[in-house]
Length: 455
Image (cartoon, rainbow, N blue to C red):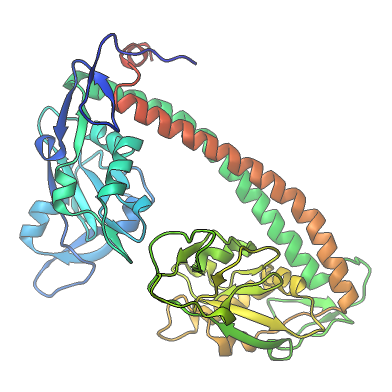
């Protein structure tokens, strides 16, 4: 589909922006809005007013901030409430993060929200008269603004935007009438794309559930529907084949290693550099060697911690409880990647195939034990204690039967994995289309006035 362009353009004076419509202006953010960096933290202080806190994750995971979100309770001073209480037309952005990609993620506030206050690590952008808050929100979602802030963000282990960098970013500003037309056009068109992405995500969810069920059945019931069963004596496991054993992992695991987590550069290691894997390298049973951070040049690698093909890796700790205990088999790995202290490297006895061990940990029975161990780890949030892991009960079929189960799962899950990858590719293409459309509209590369009026 060919989209119309403006009849006349002018040089913006900004290399990364190029030409803009002749009737548009280039203005700094501080000239079109008031910007407030929040200092309201999540603690409760005596003598302050109870409020609902719109925090980092509320903004990160929602394009729109509404009354029905599950806000954290906190307190704030009357001065903070006057300054940071959310109003209709506000845009909130993330100001600090671990990576530049997560800087200036935005969310729009369509209605006044009395008692809801913008929290710490966020910036509140309140448009001035004659400037559309919705238009500013879409600007923050454009490639132009994202790339600007990626360059301006500073920090080593954590990156952030200074107040000066934020308020002085130069923006293409359409006329007031056009701003609302552009915002309305993007509201409609991105909603269509979002609907298509939701369909693909639902498909991925269904396939993932089916994949989990196939694995869970194979590693607890086996492949023979007529095999004699016995009670396991464990409520969440139920019956298992009579010839299987149910030892604790102390009898299955030879030893467990943990690595090293030095302060690394906030970037992925180049192919010829040493890197340290992040906790996300084993998300959902798949080893992803690109999930790493570069080891600084002034630190020497510990060669014994290098990850090798055939390793079994397990996430010991994660910011997300759902990812603790994620286990993956390393079939292929780039050289010069080290184990971090958030990852277990597990060496199993010869009676257990490492691939079967990984498959079992991607099933319901082992997942249940992981969740119980996490909840029982006093003072260790989202952490799997080694002692608890070694007490897990583990269903073990004979070695040849393990190999048959692995072959069965490779075939069955391979089909589902292919469909999941197709759906993920479709989402990626739709997301690219969405971002490109936003960027083109808010920088004047397309003229949506006729399109908006015809809608």
